[in-house]
Length: 88
Image (tube, rainbow, N blue to C red):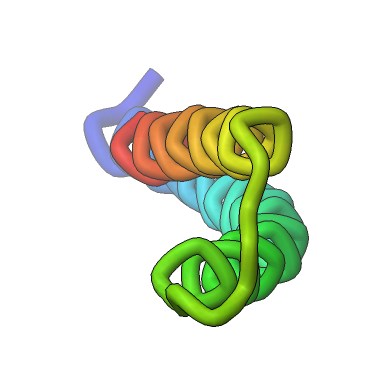
């Protein structure tokens, strides 16, 4: 096999790998965006709950605060998953 043929084969393989990687990055980005959109819904929930907890004119129970904390922990986990997915 000539040097030119070897180089052309290498270029062809690199091109295929590059295209596969681009597709994987695109799909990972879409998945991360979908998960972020879901996390945004949780963010809106917890912001609303936090404003109710902070408002001293609204009585909040320990159960309400506990549920808000659970939503916050779930949101934190979502952010960690998204960050991990983007760094892979």
